Length: 218
Image (cartoon, rainbow, N blue to C red):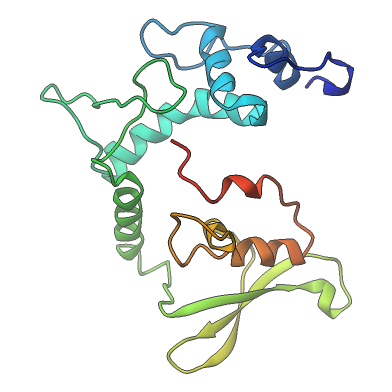
């Protein structure tokens, strides 16, 4: 990673500066590139579309690992991405892109992925327990009991009984969505209230770029 403080100030449209600031010497030889988008130009275009707010390791990870995960979602998990008569993905082109590279399921791609993942989870009810009508309130940490600041569960509010319960776990993953509803104007759903972000922040997690949570990026 480059030290951006030692680089000249950026000029509007100066993507060379952006590339220097984001990553120097990035090996793009084994990245996935659509036809006619080979070599470092693909990475440069991705970073250009994201202005100076892109994280180089994230861009690298998406370009290298994204296609494999998309194929797994489609072929193993069964996400119904749109395909043409030949069975190939019907790729779309979104804001800032120079070629068609986006898989989609009509105009409700997120919902299609969500429904498919939920169905796969429900099929594993022998190993995965679902708790409908429960809301996470806060995280359980050993620091509250005099130990190190390690998370080992969560407080849950049962909406059917109005009881607060505790759930312990060896690993806790927060997947609660964004925080669009904290802004006055947003197209985000009412449930995007940032609860998970607040819970993580209270136990010391770093929070950044919240200004991007309130709008559809395309």
